Image (cartoon, rainbow, N blue to C red; front, side, top):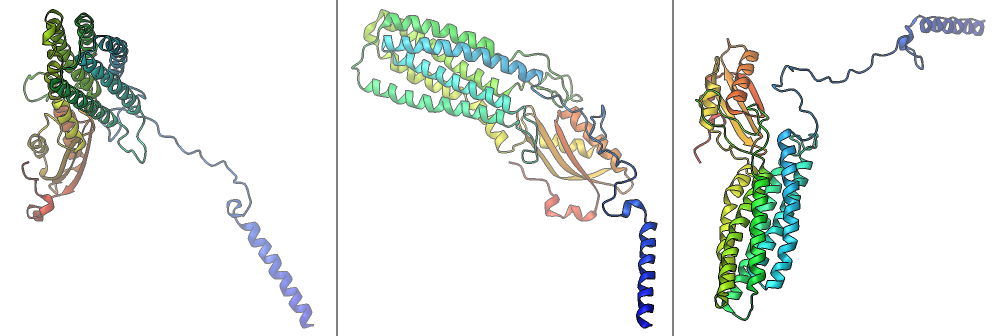
Length: 385
């Protein structure tokens, strides 16, 4: 009797469990299909005027300025390679160290221009989670490689010129040297013309190649230009100066063969001039790599601009740096009054930095002003350099 009652109770429990499962919503049952298809994940769409970005998303590929720079480098590289081969042959036939010096400088030019072309291509790659700023600084590294290569080649040739000054057991063919030097001058003039910074017109926006403060008087725009083309142009100017020196030495040796020492002397003098011509480019490159304040952008003017925004009481953690000569970045903390609107302060401060200084990227953090900030060591301004 007890067994029959227990069996009956189990049966009632099973039936009750079935009813509870059937009463559940279909979406909670295991291995069941949803009654309606799940909505597809929305894809990010570029907005013409985004809530937090001043400019729309730039199109893929090279900007017009960089396209023009690439065309300049392609043309100059081709001219440089052809005349370099001619100078190697002419220098060998003339037994002239000065001609071979010019050919070696042209070889360094070819290598640096090819490196610059590679850096221009690399800088078009989009930003990633590892390279969050993209590959813009590859242009700066290409300019540094160009300068270093010239310094290395010039050092070797200076040593050879010094050896020739000590030992006079060499002969120079004046006619072949004069002809080759004349062609070298023409080649360097042609390359300087091709590489001259006369690209398409640029805007004064955050991504332009040059800018001027819009509210500080009618000053001329600051010609920054493309770093790689600028380095190659300076390279060629040094070679042009040396080519004129070699041409003068070849004329002297052609008419006065006993003055053959003019060959190593011209190599020595004009190689030093070529080294000095790279100093400005090297200074700018090192300033960028050391995260220095961009050229022609002062710390005090940026700070005063931020403090002039209504509602801003103080600024700290102000940092200014550059990825290239034309890509400037700023970040800062803004301490505001408790009655100020953070969104309005952020919009006004960003707008002033973009319009007055041409920054490509600005990151501003808004926080409420506290009296303790005046004594905080981390909130103090950095000292003068």
